[in-house]
Amino acid sequence: MILPGISIPPKKSTRWLLAALIPVLLAACGIQAVPHSTPIPQPLAGEITFYDWEEDMPQSVLDAFTEEYGVKVNYLVYESQEEAIENMKEGKVYDVVVMESRFIPLLVKENLLAEFDQRNLPNTKNLFANFRELAYDPGNRYSIPYNWGTTGLVVRSDLVAEPVTRWADLWEPRYYGRIGLWMGQRREVISLTLKSLGYSANSENPAELESALERLLEVKPHILVLEDFSLVNSADILANGQALITMGYASDYLYGHEQNPAITYVLPAEGALLWNDTFIIPSNSPNKSTAELFLNFLMRAEVNARIVNENLYASPNEAAYPFVEVDILNNPVIFPPNKDLANAELVLPLSPQGQQLYDEIWERLINAR
Image (cartoon, rainbow, N blue to C red; front, side, top):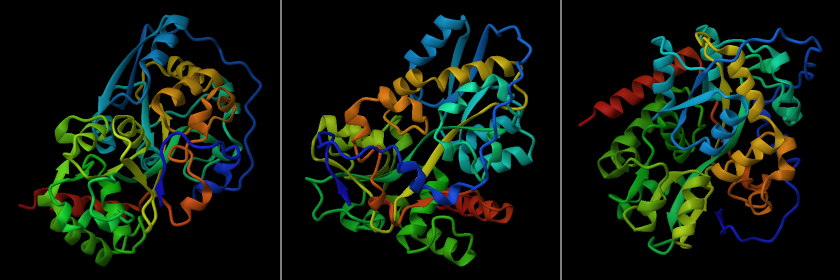
């Protein structure tokens, strides 16, 4: 389905969207109560290190935390989740990291995450109930949901020969040389290719993965690697016509549509990909209590709404919704209606054997000439 621009009539509240959005992620386990005991106060660190995607967290939010608590936040950026995980495995020190939910079980298994002191995180009460007891992290012991969204296609609708409606349109020869992929999102690139072939986005079937590799090798010489343009989103190269179709997210479309109304967002007919990011504290953080203070600050209703209003991604923070701008809440690109997610799949954690298969597929793709 091709979604319209930002200016749309108000629709029903998105308050109950999350209950139906990603049921495969949720576990029907009751919600753990936050202990009533008070933690022993710890001295605040002078600074903490925050590790995230470039321009994902608004600087105004970090500045507000520093102004209130006197703690400087050093914002470091990565180009892929795999890069972040590798740096954590090598012992590099971060205090808070933004990490996709699918990696949480692996990081817990490898003892790379600190378990939260829930007494320092009373604002978890602001989360939707369905985000407080998740299958990948029961009890939210190691992760706090940050935001969620879809991965779809961003299109210059006025420059394509026919309406773009499917992942398979990325393999249309007439568009070769003007197709953009975020190659830093290796798992999503493989998953969308699997979807284009009619397979599950989480397939661990070796034959299906081999078919996905063959399809990626076919298009590899004809793609624009979006990271090579040092882009935060694909808006600029879509607006100037350098790219016609890119895999993308809400921000790619929203910033692009401001530049050129012909830029549209498509949830592919084979099914969009669903993702959700979380906050974690690495086990080697020397400033755990200050990191928890920072996370509790980010979960305040007004603060969380500021994040949504600036980075334009949906939040699982129910208390923030009254402070989120109405046109954002009513935007179907940011908060897609349930009917448009019928074929969508959440990108899930892989088994160790499955992860090895995906890693091998990716290495063969990157090393192919």
